[in-house]
Image (tube, rainbow, N blue to C red; front, side):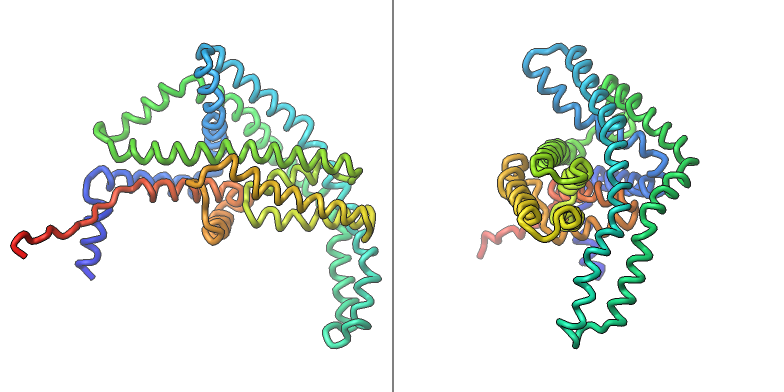
Length: 358
């Protein structure tokens, strides 16, 4: 056992820099778990600034000055932030409340179908079981819209905290983008002066994480926008809300698309019932998912960012359990980050020196 431990540490922690990096990663993870909620504005600002830096570099590549590139990209960010805050979020929230009020109608439409189950499948369902299910489920969904209203009223004390968050993020993004070089230099003062391992790992992480974050941002816009146009053409209710859900679902591969299928099918059924329009919506949604998985994703992402489905589900479970809904959305970037660190981490394999006398 002692020999195994010695071999493990000799392979992966054979120099001081790797030990220091391990300590820094452990401290960073501990701080995220402990006070990540308080650091949310700073973390969000760093992620957004990191995302915007790619566009800044692109403008610099085409000859724009640093000041002009920064001004253009930050103005674009503020414009998108304002549209999301003042237009998308209020309309999506209103549509969510309207959808919640439609759920009882959806239950009533399905009630006749459910009541026919004991006649069609007497060995599996009884009338008492179906009636109990309808009563219980109806009581839950009947007050869903009211609970949304109560939640919005109960969350009024947190409005001040959200206002601070929404105010701090644009300010922090401005200074992180403007003083990026100074901040990186300041952070480097806390690291070893000779750090080839950290530089190599940072380059690996930067390549994979930047490709992933920027690629996902483009994918969300394309898939969400295509879904919105599709639902508008078909004439489907709650088009904005559903397109936002579909756009965000691509952040969590496999799981997101499966979960969002339920509200899409439910809204189509409530609006049209089982008919040609319903099948049109579901086929169009299926084509959109096929286009995303087989055309869009291979074009946007490199193979280096591929994660096994088991790793994706495990990341969602772990980080979702730690940070809730925010952990679900950030699970894949964090898993990609861990993968990048593992790929770039040095390992010293001790090969046997051949005996020249043999």
